[in-house]
Length: 59
Image (tube, rainbow, N blue to C red; front, side, top):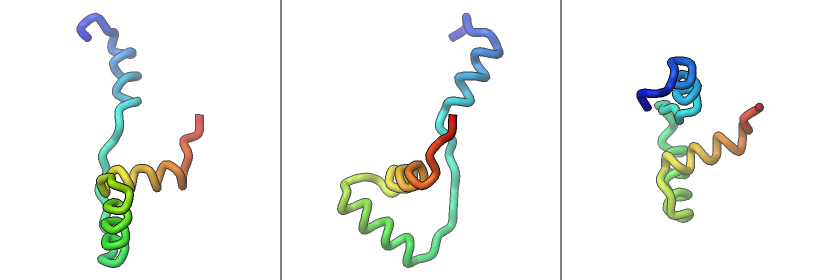
C-alpha cells in the first residue's frame, strides 16, 4: 500500500464501511433481536440491510 498516492488512499478510505451508533426503543430492539435470530444474522447486519434497502445508495 506504500506505493499509493494520497489521493488514491483517500479514495479507498471513502469506500470503507462506516460505523454508527444509534439508540432505539426497547420494543424495537426486541423486534430486531427476534428477526435477527429468525434470519440467522447479527443485529448489526440486519440493521445495515434494513437501512440499505430503505435508502439505496445513489451513484
